[in-house]
Image 1 (cartoon, helix red, strand yellow):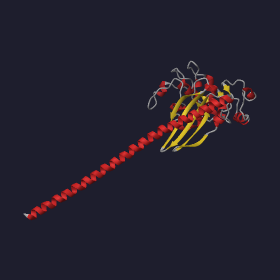
Image 2 (image 1 turned 180 degrees about the vertical axis):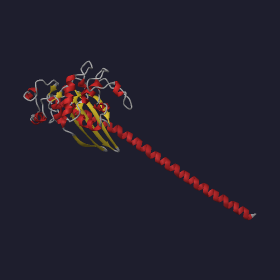
Image 3 (image 1 turned 180 degrees about the horizontal axis):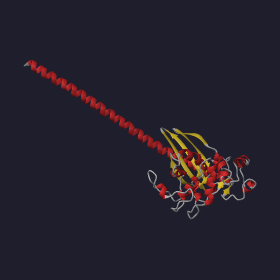
Amino acid sequence: MNRLLVKAAGKQSGVALITAMLIVALATILTGAAIWDFHLDQRRTESLLYSDLGFNFAVGAEAWAARALVEDAEDGDVDHPEEAWATNLPPLPIDGGSVDGALSDLNGRFNINNLVDADGATDSEAVSQLERLLESLDLDRRWAGLLADWIDSDINPNFPDGAEDTVYLGQDPPYRPANRIVTSVSEILALPEMDLETFAVLAPHVTALPRGTSINVNTATVPVLMSLSEDISASDAASIIEDRPEDGYEDLTELADVLPEETSAPLSVRSQYFKLAVRVNIGSVELTMYSLLEREGAAGVRTILRSTGID
């Protein structure tokens, strides 16, 4: 009898030991999971705090850029690449990171919304200008007609390079053209067969602004200057940039010998629209913000659009 009791007691102690080990193992697993969840929550909270802080720094940089543009307008009516606003902001130290930024003049680019007139109809002269721009970049001229049809208000394909619903509804997945002015040049990627390589070549020379903007000859690139007329060669455009005075062309009459009289595109020596790119590194977060700024002379600057992460 005593042997049976001893044997039973041994079995019970063995079960108790295994049970205790299971409880310890389970407690360890639960504790580890709780600690892991705590660290994840801590990182999420930290990221949210740094994201908010980074956005505030970016908006602060935007205010600084606006002030720089107003001060520039107070100094004179001519805008050129040698002015203070055109100097990139080097990385500045902030608590926990750095912030840097750059302003670019969008009036030195071709405004794709100029492809339509005030009634939303295709502007044939603007289409011809975009065709010349594409040709100067060794790109297919047909993109001009396709882009004009994407923006114009009607549903009738332009000839010979237009495309409307019948083409876009046949895409995979199907979609419809905008048929209105656009807010981002990225919409060019929606054109049939448009690829990233072509877009990367074209994008630095085009912009999406309110319709009717002029081109600043002081900040325009060689391809944009070539787009002004069939009679402006690459060497002519390069000469315009190389011969530009240190303080920029103060009047279009200074280019009378270079620019053909039949140039139909509106030109100027001052700018109204600028793009600000701000990058903030703080803690574990890197934030990039793009702002479209409209300068109303010395009266002030207003932000039209903001986007984070994507231009």
